[in-house]
Length: 381
Image (cartoon, rainbow, N blue to C red; front, side):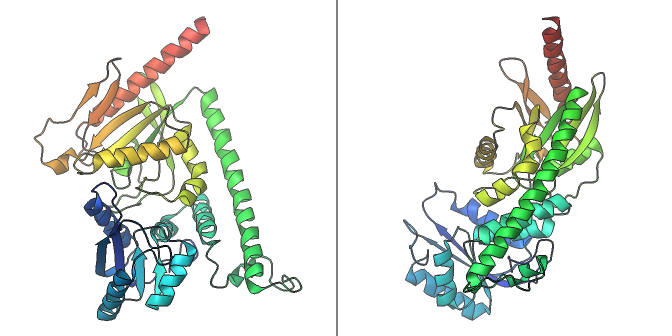
């Protein structure tokens, strides 16, 4: 299921979801709802949800024996053939669970990687997804990987006395190396494009935020692009860049980026680091937030955590509180607030209806004006 080649659409699987509260600060309900959305985004048919609380995971099977019995009963009652944990499982835990339950078991990281595999559209995006999948599965070689032999013809690859597992690991390592080399070429191309923009003194803004916060809708409103928009997690994976003309200021480059999520797999952050370089190199970040989401503060914190991880935490941010139309607020609620330095730091708008969009352009215009002032002062000095 989640180890299919990037881009293939999997079959619908009857699935039992397992989500245990490990004492994570009282956000169990929000975490479970997000987990459900992930499963739906992966086209899984949810037949049962097994919940529970525990102080710490079992080292052998993550869940205790009683909970495993509950999962087994749910499998028997519903006829499901897949169990998905809302947690990261070690290779040993995954193998033990599959042995005890007699079915396929995957963890949260594998689920997210599978969604990414379905959604990636660009050649680079597909390469990045495949790299993340292979690096995650490298420690889980319990089945054969001999399909990789087709990359080199297959005949004569195995050395004397080499086991199947050793052969698979060597083939996988070669594939990972090839993917990384291809991605480096894409990185160099983007570096050249950025240098060209810098020579032309074109500023850039990156739209970042939690998944399903409305980033692509805002991007389309601003640039009149046709980026895919859907009310689901990770609707957009491939970074898209367009020019936006600001009256009296000139052109600005705007980038739409992949959405972040709680406990984003490290393999995914590493694999998508090249795409996220557009964010790292931006002059300003438009941090889009679903204003009506009860967990918006936690989502803001998660986004900022990933931004710090990729080295983008020092870039100026404008917080965009989106979806005010969904909050049934009266017309005219859109607006903005300034910080003590007089800069616009927060905007309330609806990307869907367009109400308040002018405040985004005003904020970007002021960023461009401030940048031009610094450049002029530098030249004068």
